[in-house]
Structures are given as C-alpha cells and as structure tokens.
Length: 83
Image (cartoon, rainbow, N blue to C red; front, top):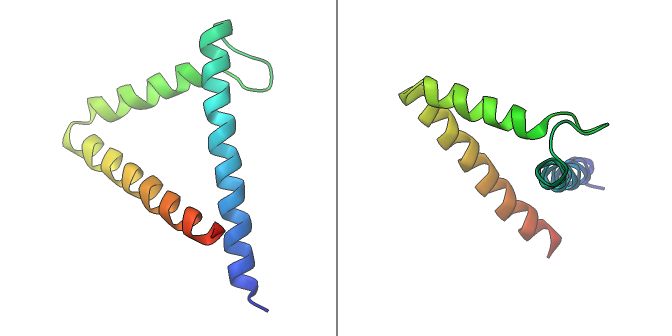
C-alpha cells in the first residue's frame, strides 16, 4: 500500500479542481461583472497580483517564472499519473 502515492494523487486532483474553479470564477466574473457571491473579486485579485509582480521588477519576473515552472511540472506529472 503506497500511502504517499495515494496522498499525492488526491492532492493533484484537488489542485486540478481548484484550477478549474478559478478559471470558471474568472469567466463568470468577466461575464457578470464585479464581485460574485462565494467567489469574491477574482479578476480584481488577479489584476492586483500581476500589478504587484510587475512593480517588483526582476524579482517579480523571477517569481512569475517559478510559478509558471511549478504549473508546467505539475501539469505534466498529473497527466502522467492518470495514465
């Protein structure tokens, strides 16, 4: 029984669901406009995050690169785990 493998697969699935919910919240926020119940101001928060990263110059670019790297590696390993 591989308990760590099971935990990793559960966490991967939770992350996948979270990413889908964030995408849905962004689309709904753009269509409806403003803040949505239970979802908050997703577009405003994303805009604030991008503005904060942009105002930090090179450090912001490094953090953005690390975030993208994490998402790319997670996507590849999650797809491989499903097969």
